[in-house]
Length: 94
Image 1 (spheres, helix red, strand yellow):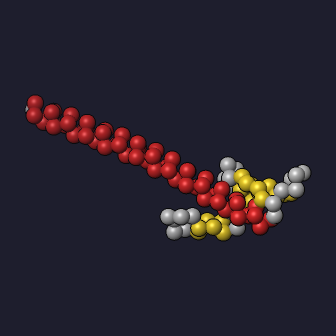
Image 2 (cartoon, rainbow, N blue to C red):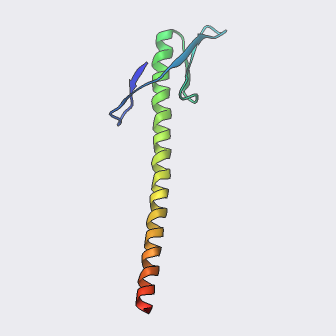
Image 3 (tube, rainbow, N blue to C red):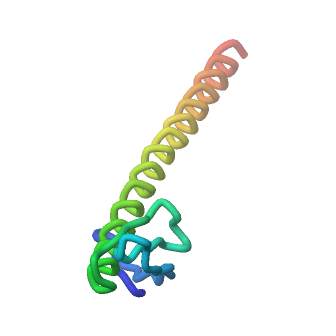
């Protein structure tokens, strides 16, 4: 299944497993994103629903990545600032 995720220019291909449950509903799960799980009364409904589930999981993962990336950048800036202050203080003493 091909799917373009909102805000991302790259089209990613995902594989899904589709099976009919005991209750008659089709259950579908993304192989690459196991958290993306859905169901539908028909195969068509299940596929439509898994596309939405995949988009939501990718959006959450992207938000977590951005949040962690901001923390990493803030720590790097802090280290650079501290090193600059130490060097400046050392040059002043000399």
